[in-house]
Length: 80
Image 1 (tube, rainbow, N blue to C red):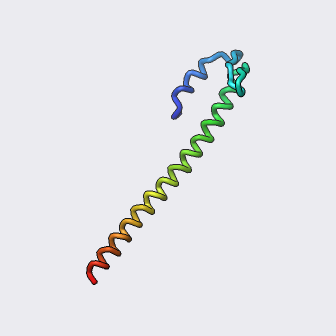
Image 2: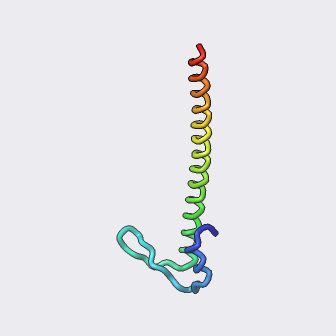
Image 3: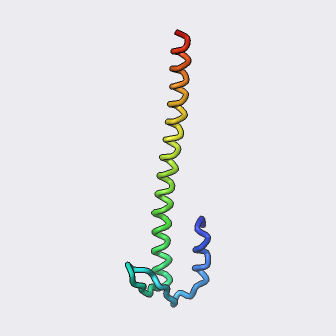
């Protein structure tokens, strides 16, 4: 699991509850609901990170190819 801070959750009592921030108030929620909420947030973040990784790869490849193309153009212009 990439989020190590969640590892203690299985050791918590299922009957317990946590305070969750709802705007400016705190509301008690059961542990399973908190685990579900955090699990869905983790999936969303992992999806965003994956999309950003793909975007980074695209931009790095584009920059590399552009640099090579510019260098070829400059070398060709110097020979004329």
